[in-house]
Image (cartoon, rainbow, N blue to C red; front, top):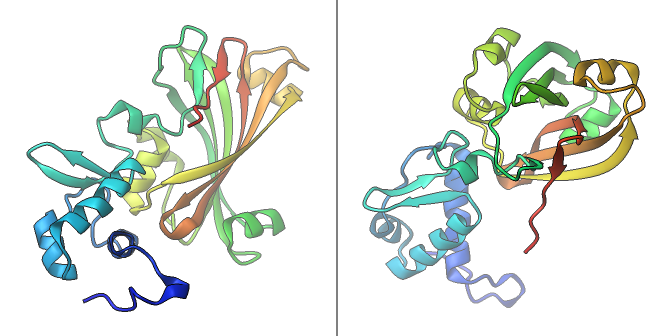
Length: 247
């Protein structure tokens, strides 16, 4: 039975406490991305609460894209490999001027290991000099290069990732990190600014040197608000725009 639900300074609705306990199961890997979680009735028995309380917790987690309800099949841990298009492209904000969602072609360029400098150490919350993996890739839309990404990952979490693994990946990078390393990105923070293309980025993106690019810095978090990815991207917006839905 849950304790401390009547302590005013730390009071939290009962369903929120159940949500926290389910999140602990996700964080510990008890239920991995794509797997079904126990039924509402089973969770109610496990946590000694009503089925309605469990349902309210799961409803909120489904609204936050942490869980997915499937009619007649149960409730699953949300996955970047899920067939649902909204989930698959939830972190992809670049849209063509036509407005239709495009599936990008992922072209890994480099993958190497390094030691975290001060900026990577601070952003990823790892020790200075800790191992990191750095990935450079190009994304093409309709065969046209549009995005250059430089991605920094904590080496201890993603040990074993290679350029060959990235080149053989048929889905998204987040799907690969999830299926191979059990790490799910659940939210991200981004900072945007406009810059001019330097010679190297202009050559990769097929634009003129000095052409306007959108620079996007992203930090992605897994459960418990743990930062597990830092990326810096350069976006050509000649035929695309950045879409952000508010509310």
